[in-house]
Length: 227
Image (cartoon, rainbow, N blue to C red; front, side, top):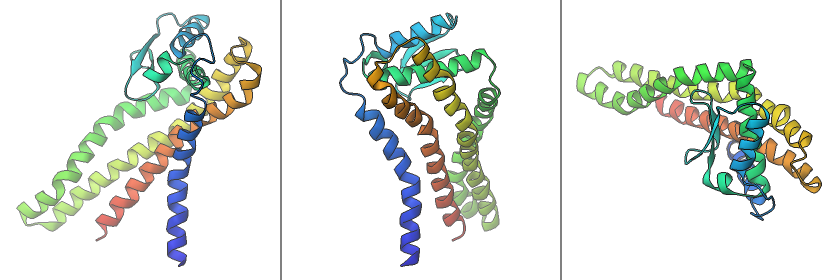
């Protein structure tokens, strides 16, 4: 019984943050005509105010983010064209990352460097995890397969490291950059200010849920490795 309760607690800790984030983002996505400008228009406005004229605003299917390499704020279609509180707030959050980049914010620079290193490592690790059972069977050296499997398993930890390093960057983008911009330039309707704070928290915690999911993947592969 105790083990069952422990499993439920762990699953709750892993999945509940992501569910809460998605619920908050969805809740304030309606009505979609709450603001006269779209998320893309607000992003452009805030970028220009901060003299980031060279930073572009584009649509993406890979999730809202700022690309410090290409200098682009990328918003999913619903945020790019949307006029909801969610669209406005998420756009401001991503512009917050662009402002971090402009000021050479150290945690953002560290994250950018880690992503450059971790990306190839993760792809290599995924390949190792896929071929390691076959290598062990073909070579008739089980230990080799175990070593390769362990190497692939360890690469999964790299994504967790990136997500946790990301946390200070995300909270600063929300509450150190986006919220002051929204307040200073009187973007938000007064009644929306507490809701915007909740949305900015959700935007920051997106990476917390990703970190927890990464830990779950590590635990799953660890269990397989020990069999």
